[in-house]
Amino acid sequence: MKVVNYLLILASVYVLTAGPTHAAEDDHSDDSHAHGDVNEERGEHEESESTHAEISAEMAEQAGIRSKAAGAGILERTISSYGRLVPNPDGIALIRARFPGQVTKINASLGDSVKAGDLLASIESNDSLQPYTLRAPFAGTVIQRNINVGELAGEQALFTIAKLDPLWVELKIFPGQRREIAPGQLVRIDTGDAQHESRISHIVPQNSGSPYVIARAEIANAEELLSPGRLVSASIVVERIEAPLVIENRALQLLDESQVVFVQEGNSFEPRPVELGRTDGQFTEILSGLKPGERYVVENSYLIKADIEKSSVSDDD
Image (cartoon, rainbow, N blue to C red):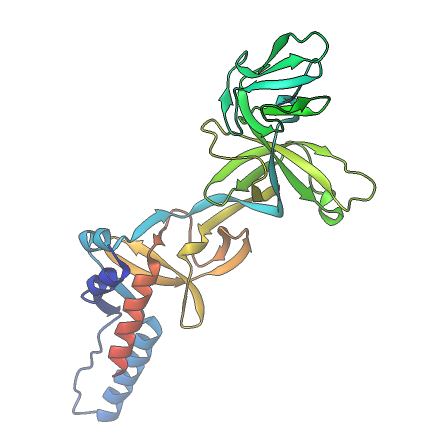
């Protein structure tokens, strides 16, 4: 359901103000005393006043409002990096001619998948004038072809075959980051259209003129949807912090200049101001304002905020 429809649904939700009703008994024998009681009771009412929304379970379901129980969690401190996908060096073969000669037939093109033993090309030896063949040493993909029929095959690599599952991701780690990066750390890799999880396998030093080192991690590519050379970004988890109470950041809303979450009790949704602690961008530690086990709205909490603000404006009018 579109957001507009959500707002139309919530526009019909009844937002009420909870608190004691004003009550005062007329006392004709002491009008000033009665007036004082009314003012005192009105003050108590204003102090205990709490705006909340009443939304039925069916209405909440239609609007996509979801809640979950608050509890302990893990905050992750990460370091951002970027790099590119490359074939595993152990899975690359450069195919050269055994003897110099003229290429008489080509059986594999750039991008072709080949199996071990598949025919790649036929060459006629310059010395013996006898033909011989080049075959794939293992299953993989032709990622380079540097020869055509009629050309002379010498010492150059004619074909490059690579295994594309798995690939390596090579991430650039600069001096300011190097101290915190180590093999075994969890890394989340963003290829632009998907997220992949892996672990740092090893750190590869670069030549003396390079300002960075390379952190390598393996990435699965069973369907071969990823190709070498693709640029990627990554988040490397360098620290995991246990927190007694955390919430998802998307639950937070700004209401009356305070950070709040909407706490659910049955069909009632109450804005609860919270004191925030540490955050990792996805989860935030709660220092006060919410208790473990209380249910707070995670999805579409902004709809409740919009409805409460709309009700407040109506009340002011």
